[in-house]
Amino acid sequence: MKLSALGRIALATGIAVLATATLPGTPAVAAPVTRKILPVLVEFSDASFQFPEKVKASTPDTYFGAKSDSAASFLSEVSRGQYTLVPAVKEQFLGPIKLNLSAAGCPQSKINQLTREELTKRGLVAGKDYESLSIVFPAQKTNCPWAGLATLPGPTTWINLYGTASGIDVVGHELGHNLGFGHQGRLLCTGGNLGACKSEGSSYKSIMGAGYRASGFSAPELIRAGWLSGGASLKVTKSGTYTLRSLHGKGSGTRALDIALGGDRLVIEYRHAAGNFDAKIEGVHAYRVPKGSYGASSLIDTTVENKTASNNAAANADAITKLTDKASKVAVAVVSSGGGQAKVKVALNGDSLSAIDAAPSKSATPTPSAATPTPSASASADTEAVTDESTPVSAVDSGDLAAVDGRSTTLPLAAGGGAALLAAGVGFLLLKRRRRRT
Image (cartoon, rainbow, N blue to C red):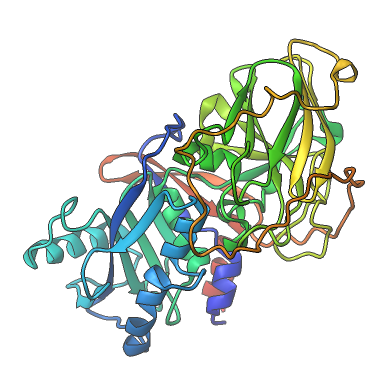
């Protein structure tokens, strides 16, 4: 059977080639960045694009188009204007370039090497003329078991193209790997007990966790990128009630609570429709950050069934109401959530949640500095309704679990003579195996 472009986007979360066995996690306050990316169309000695003119016509829109579904528009909005993606050449892409290489066997390392050699012949210097390289090639004969590949973190993405355009769900996901984000999983912590969790599928709260473009990035990923600065991310050091504004919303305010959890971190965010994000995500969500590696966070879900990208569960189906961790003497409870803000109690050092005043103190929500970024121009002026009133947290609704990607796994891979990891979406690999048998 042939795998449609839509099927590839729905099933493939992509693959990340890691330089080391652990994800880098030290967050930094990011200065505004403008990064030059060079999309290059390449063909093989035995394989060419089926519709080269359509591929050439769609590539500029995929990476730099004015609409919200281009890579440049997506990254500008999700970073609140702190990350700008620009074309490295005035034509916005190069190619197709014919490589003296067979497509068979998915030779991604050789594709990278030969493409860079061709760019050098044309006088283009890596790091000077272009800072990121995105290699787009026809998929029909490569038999690559992925829709996209990326260095994590790093400057290179490979796009395995079946049709005429991969779209932001693939390209944006791989660029997220370049930024240092891994695949975001889900921890099932039934009853809210953080001492009894098990890994269970994907988060669906980030483009890195099968949530696709409409979910943007999650709070831990924004912290990892340095895009929640100026008070937007608050490290909680004392018990109290804190006010959160919606993660992707306009204006100032605290977007994430960052809490010590033994050697790990607990990050709390509030999600609400804003701009082009979170139309189907609502409520307070929590993530566990292992050993401070914010790019390797996992959603904490207290329900058996979660809100995926393809089911009809309530938007707040996997929002939290209460979490406890006896070992770290930390407890969290949602006081209210809705209308663009949430109030959350945090009890540290074994303090009682019931003893904490439900009204946030004036010092609980710091005023961001003047350096706080403003939303990108792509967000419309009426994208988020913010009120002074908060509605009570509704009961968690159950929905049919219709996970598309399945679990992610980690496999050893020898790359460039050194040790590396390969993280792949199992659902897509299984489908590819079936495809080979037909």
